[in-house]
Every structure is written in C-alpha cells, then in structure tokens.
Image 1 (cartoon, rainbow, N blue to C red):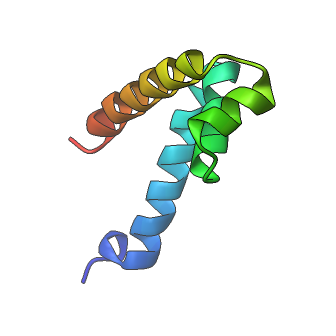
Image 2 (image 1 turned 90 degrees about the horizontal axis):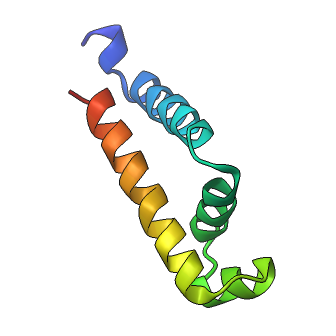
Length: 76
C-alpha cells in the first residue's frame, strides 16, 4: 500500500482540508456551522445568537453549499 493511501494519512488530509475550507466561510457562517456540528438545533442556534431561525437555516444552507463545492474541487 502506498503511504498516502493509509487511513491515518487520508484522515489527516480530510481534517486539514476541512479546516482550510472553514477558513473560507464568513464569520457568521462559521459560527453557525460550528454550532450545527456540535449538535445544536437551528432553533437553539437562533436563540443563542439572537437571530431568526430562518436566518440560521439560510446561512447554514449557504455554508454547506460552499463547503460541498470546495470539497468537490479538492476531490477531483
């Protein structure tokens, strides 16, 4: 097996790639996305950040869309 195909190396690559993609999000997108990843519901995020639930939903949708687009670029 080639070194770069080992699970440890691939896992490290995924983590570093994801962290780099997170830096491309706006501060608000990153804040909402991180809370989402921690398991908070949209309503809880909205309450915590004093935003409407619709704003949280839309921001989260846009952040996921941007990350998906960047991930697909990485993985070509």
